[in-house]
Length: 168
Image (cartoon, rainbow, N blue to C red; front, side, top):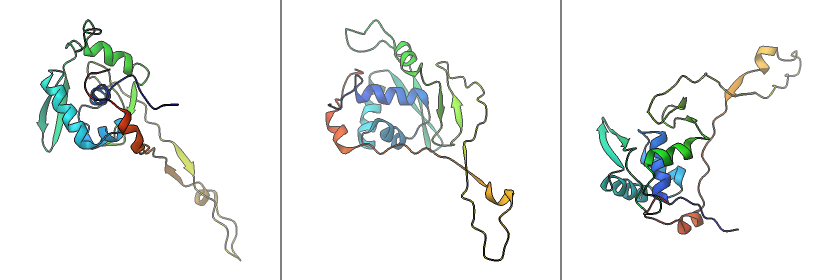
């Protein structure tokens, strides 16, 4: 089976920036599966095309998505960025912020509704009692550690098959 997707890297980068307007380009590159340098070029293309604007916020960049811009190809020019992103983000309304690790829910208007605080924990291994000691108490065996999901590192072969340019 070949590795291909319907969206180009430009579309993937745009979706990532709509999900987190203060994302680091390094994190976007990991999510999309391309180099940070390629993401920088795509952000420049999106900015030149009027799809996004970039402002400096301290040492970080903030990306504002121009949701009413029409898509660039003649086949989908009657559709706006807002409509495209709405379809793509429909299934994933909750995301985990890379910078804070907190769960957030974002809507297209940029509002962040409250998300219940859930922490997934795993029980620690029960310690073996030392010779001559009694078994550990309940408090000693139920220490919990938060589970952190790390994004999978993309395979190098995936990058060759991806196209650059339009959103699709």
